[in-house]
Image (cartoon, helix red, strand yellow):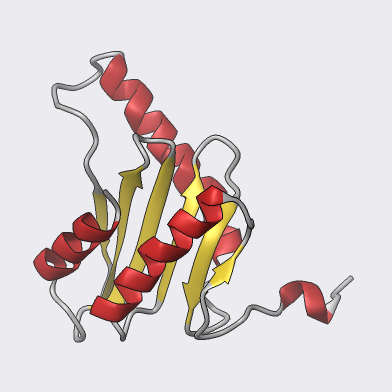
Length: 140
């Protein structure tokens, strides 16, 4: 059953999923990202344990944070568990980048590893180094 109001995303507006302190911190992080990267496609802050979207921003309905949040949270939990179990040599997880044909997606843990921030941008709009630095500044 397709219920239209369940599938509608607020486009080009930061949507806060919770009204507590976590939602406010997530909203602040996304406002900073959007100020420095006005052409970003999507950004969201997600609680890793629950998979709950704390805040999100998207420019198109094809980028839906509610559809990717659990997969990314599981990916970060698996990587963190592998690092703890010393499955491969490495320090703490700082970020994960995925390069696609014309865009890249970047994940960065925040709030002492309890949340993550996800960012999707076109390569024509910004390079990976600049995007990673901007994300680092806004997710500490």
